Length: 306
Image: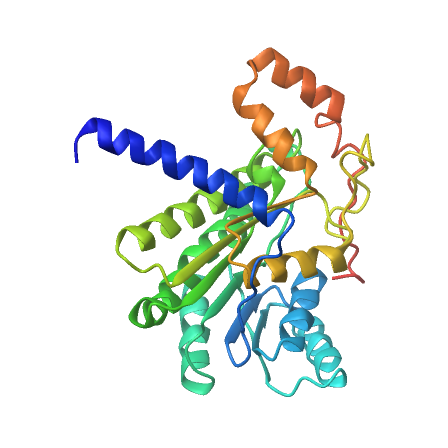
């Protein structure tokens, strides 16, 4: 196909895709049925990991829960079973340890089966300025927030590829789209998580595995305790997100094969502006939104919450 025809094709398809997006603003997208699907959620012992497990269980999915915190995970199992879920499996796993990820993954495949929906949700934050962060904490942040995604994909993606069926969900962050003062290692880990998930999604499409979907979630701060103490300068524009609402929106994004989910909706506009603004304008906007002081009052989770 020559240059003229390919260019015309791109123009026409772009018009159609934009029209399609406008239609979906008023017409709900069709939801897929995930009853019986094997859903693995890392970091399922608390926060949105636990809440997503409850949402998936209500849809008839088989749950496989991973967490390093056994007590928290057992509480998630108790809550799921008390609400009627019967197909729940849980495994203690330190997602920062590659060997342990591979070992527990093999155990899951033997005892439960091949995972068809993988939710990489486990995450940590140091909450320290870069020069105040011990090397060990920086390494742990990258291991949990980024490298664990590599190892879980390696473990569970082959079966999805063989069946051309599955869904990869990356719980990243708006800090994976825009740098934030005081979150250097966290931002680096989340930028990497976004880039990794997007790249693997494209790789799957390029090899004809269009039955494997990707959802990348980039929320602002969520009220799970992970970012306790942080305050939003303009809460009407960038509110601290409700964890229950976030979990519901993530599951809805999976059911409708939504590739990117930014929360709140204002993040779509802010992230878009970042890419077209001059550096000085970007810094001006960052100051206006309070991005330079978000972490000044950070406390994080207490030991009891963990």
